[in-house]
Structure formats: structure tokens, C-alpha cells
Figure 1 (cartoon, rainbow, N blue to C red):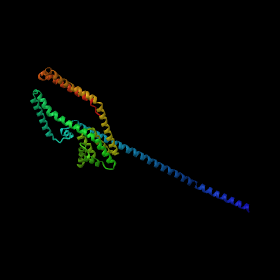
Figure 2: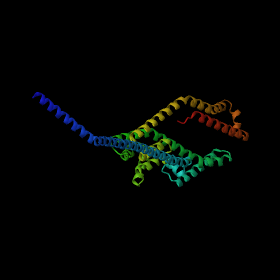
Figure 3: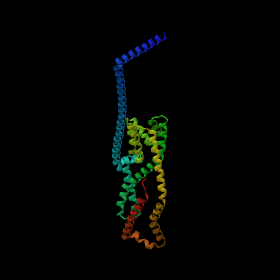
Figure 4: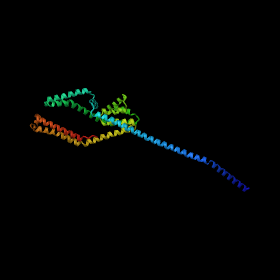
Length: 337
């Protein structure tokens, strides 16, 4: 009985294995095809993933290239506009010079004042007893020289006051932008709370915005009424940020830091050149001091310089040489930073 059960179990086991082998033989091709299809599907999915990654990388490269090209085009456009403005600013018209000096005088009134100044200077020299040959030169200097020199002096002083306050105004705009306010609100805050002449320049930007001009273009126009590179830098930074994007607060903070460093450098250069300036003042004043001392000690020795034609000629030639020397020393001790 035990042998029969063992034989039956072995027979059943062998029959099962035979049936499994026959089934595997019939299903081998199907299983192999399914495995190949699975591997093919995985390879297709991997290829699609690789193509998607390559496409995404290509898109990022193309976007970076387009953005770089956009920035380059913007810089070229801004550079061309700045060159055009610089060409106009080298010899600005008189009306623009008066605006840059902060003077509310019209061109016609300025010409009237110039004529009056020339006539007054000529009359004063005539009453003093100056030679007749000097009177036309006095009329020319009083009518064309002194008023325009006064305008240049006012422009330079106004630019200096602007540069002293401009970094503080930039810091206020940076804090406003970092707190979430738009740049227009920061500009309006400067236009109402800052000191002159920064207040006036930013008020012009606000007025230009009210007329429909964009903020970048209004900022670019600041360099027309404030002839300094710092105002042009501000307009360029705002223009680039509006076209190419970026962190405006960081850009303005960097500009403020650059302006403060330029101011420190100018102060250092001025301190280092004070010795040369003092020497130039002493050398320039020495002829007048010597002439005055000679007049006190020996007036008859120096009086012919003022009473004879040869003395007038010597004084004129000496004045020309003195002026050329003073201008040369001024050019040697003045440094642009």
C-alpha cells in the first residue's frame, strides 16, 4: 500500500511537471514578447524623458540667450540715447543752461540783464579813467562773459548740492521698494520730502508721469536738467530694470554705494591736492603782493607801468602770461573722479 501511494505520488508529480513544461513551451513566446514589449516601453519612456529634459535644457538656454540679447539690445539703445544726450549736453542752449542752474529767468530777460551788465561795467571803467581801447573789451566781457560765468557757477553749485543729497534719496527709494511699495511711490516721497535740488528734479519726474510719460523715460530725462553722470546712471538703472527685470532695490543700493564711494574718493583727492592748491594760490598772489610792496616803498619806480603806453603793454602781456600759468596750474591740480 505504501509502495502504491509512493508510485501514485511520483506519477502525479511527473504528470504535473510535464503539463507545466508543455504549458511553458506553448507560453514561452508570449512571455518573451511581453518582456520585450516591456523593455521597449521602458526604453520609449526613457527616451521621452531624455527628450523632455533635453528640450527643457534647450528652452532654458534659448530663454537665457534671448534675455541676454534683450539686455544687450537695451544697453546698445541706452548707450545710443546717452550719446545723443551727451552730444546735446556738451553745448546746451541757453534756455536749458538756465534750467540746469535753477534760474527762473527767461532768455529775453537774461539778454537784457547781460546788456545792462556790459553797459554798467563799461561806464564804471570810463568814469575811473581807463583807456578807450579797454572799453570795448569791457563791454564784451560784461555783456557776454560775466552773466554766463554766473550761470556756470550756479550750475556747478546746484550739481554739487544735488550730489550731496542724491545718495540719501536713493536709500529712501531702496527702503520703499524693499517694503513692497512700487518705485513710483518712492519717487513721490522724494519729490515731497527731500531737500533741494533733489526735490525739484524728482518733482519733474512725477509731473512727467502725470503727462503720460513712462517712469523709465522720465528718469532718463533727469540728466537733461541735472548735467551730471550720477543722474544718467539712475535713469539707466531704472530703464534696464524695466526692460530686462531684476532686483531693483539691489541695483539702486549698489548705485547709492558707488556714489558714496565716489564722494569719498573726491574728498580724499581734494585733501591730497590741498598742498598743491595752496602753492598755486601763493604763486598766483605773489606778483600782486610784490607790486603793492614796491608801490609802498618806491612809488616812482612802478608808476610808469600805469601811466605810459609801454607800461600798459607790459601789464597786458604779464596778465596774459599770468592767466596761462594759473590755468595750467588749475589743470594740473584738478582731478576728475
